[in-house]
Length: 91
Image (cartoon, rainbow, N blue to C red):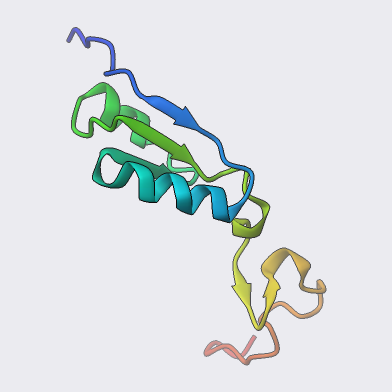
């Protein structure tokens, strides 16, 4: 199966949330926000998605990690495995 090259697009790698929001507003429906989902590149190659701009959110520190109670999961002490909540399995 021969694949042709993906359509060209502009790549933006904003360093902060404000810049990312500005770019997403500017490009609207013709932009694509990518946050680590590199399967998007297969969609581009197969021309399932054909954005004019890709906004890569991976480098924005404020968006990293899962947050609960104002802390990122990686900031939780090792002995606090469930954020102070009991799990259904009793662990």
